[in-house]
Length: 77
Figure (cartoon, rainbow, N blue to C red):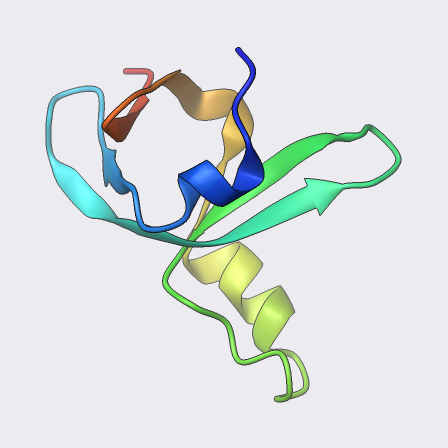
C-alpha cells in the first residue's frame, strides 16, 4: 500500500470492528527502515521534553496494524 504522509493527517482511525479511535495528528517515520512506524492520535508538543516519547506509548498505533487507508484509516482486527 502506498500513500503520501500528508494524506494521512486528519484522517479518522477506525478499529477493525468500526469503533472510532481518533484522528491522525502525527506520523512517525522510521528513517532506517524508510517507512511509517506509528500513527499518533492528536498532536505532540515537541517543545516539551519527553512529550514525543509519551505520545508514542500512550496515543499511538503501530502502522503494521493498518489494514486499509481510504476515507479513514481502518485497522486490522
